[in-house]
Image (cartoon, rainbow, N blue to C red; front, side, top):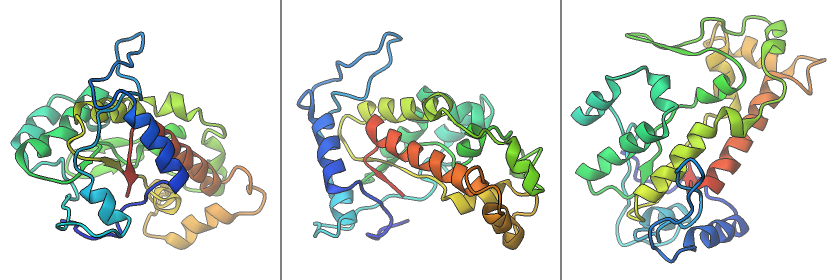
Length: 247
């Protein structure tokens, strides 16, 4: 369990005020912002009832130490295993409805102080055009990992984050509404270097991986810069769609 105060990254004061203004529309009533396809939009979020986690993250005094768990939505829950058994891991990640359900399951059992959106850091490499598969007994695998500097040119040089990761943003918005203000919704993202190490042929060889980031001649299109741009846009769009904090 993580009970500290250094695990969350909050938006700037200005960003928090803008997010709070968006979240307060509707005064805690059920969401009215409906898109044409019937999905809930990022407006009219229910009023937050428990902000203990957020206050602790800002370094403020709290009545108790707020609790959330790594792998909060995980295999220790029989309902998680039942939900996940129906389809592939990344197919689950691409379903806003299933991500929402898996995010909410732990809160039905335990008095936690935050919900953590169900997703994976490797959706970013997928957005960059890489194939990632979940191999039973082994974990996430790249059929064609980055082996040489030239492989970087195979990555999408310009990524439409809204199109490639729209399912993540829809899951965030849907879950924020379904939480009904019970606790904050927090998320996460892999740092660019972590993502690059995951994508390389030898992830335990950081010298070779870091060399790919800094190779001359690829300063504008190198792996690190592409990852930074996608991760940054991912976090910004996630906040707009309803995410309150990120780890």
